[in-house]
Amino acid sequence: MRFMIIMYPENYPTAKAGWVPDLTDIEDTRKFHEELAAAGVLQSLDGLTPPATMSARITLKNGKLKVTDGPFTEAKEVVGGFYILDVKSREEAIKWASRIPRKDDEMIVEVRRLFDISDFTPAVQDKLTELEEEQAAKFGNKPGQQ
Image 1 (tube, rainbow, N blue to C red):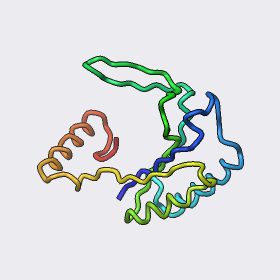
Image 2 (tube, rainbow, N blue to C red):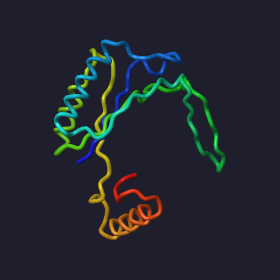
Image 3 (cartoon, rainbow, N blue to C red):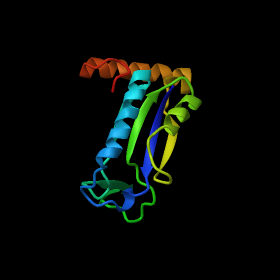
Image 4 (cartoon, rainbow, N blue to C red):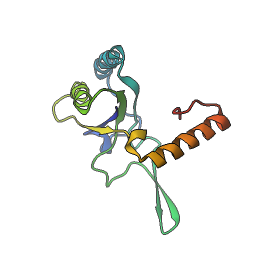
């Protein structure tokens, strides 16, 4: 099962453009990344810059697109980074998410399962497989690789 672990740092909605984490936080997090990799569960991870740094929200209303530049003053929670883990269970994903280095009340961490082809009906599974094969033939990637 694949899970996305989403981090919502407390200071991100108001962080200034150009903010970066300090070296101590980077070192602590790096150790955690090495543990994830050594366990063979890490598929992807990345941190996001604060909304004040080159961000935009695009909305569609009444058929019209609207682009709003960050920061987003109405935002109470802003995604600061994510992990994609391939684990055996929800409990294992929660166990890993609980180990993310942080200080008290510094950030909210959310665990969400990614859709899997087995979540869909057999007819939809067949169509998705067909579409993946068409994409692989057109773009040269392997089925299941985006």
